[in-house]
Image (cartoon, rainbow, N blue to C red):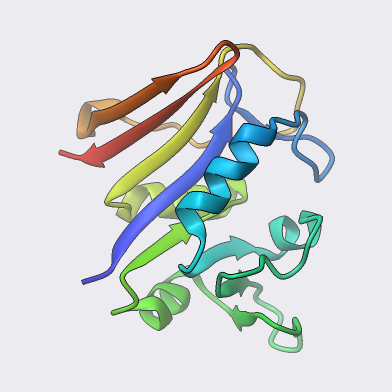
Length: 156
């Protein structure tokens, strides 16, 4: 069985990006992301992939969503739909949904788990995490820091 996990860092006001970049730099969050995703497939949109400082993400199978059939990425797999990417990952254990906003929106609908870094302040941005009905989710782990919290949810 494949476990689908949405992983994201989200500001208090829902911001996840600004101008194609993450509007904060939290070393511990990058480390947390790496620890959770290492060795697992990571599905992301092409804009998210292009914004990565290191491409492809090392030690992970990078699966990029792009509707353009001619779009090629050395060292990564390109799929033309979210459904096609999930089908490709079937039987691979855990698969992480890594953004951006439209990919998160699709991911939240089918995810078994949410791994969120919730920042304790608002940030200026132009990309937002989708609305989540937290009545459908159970908080199973929480690790509070001064400026953010690591939150793990499972679907009820």
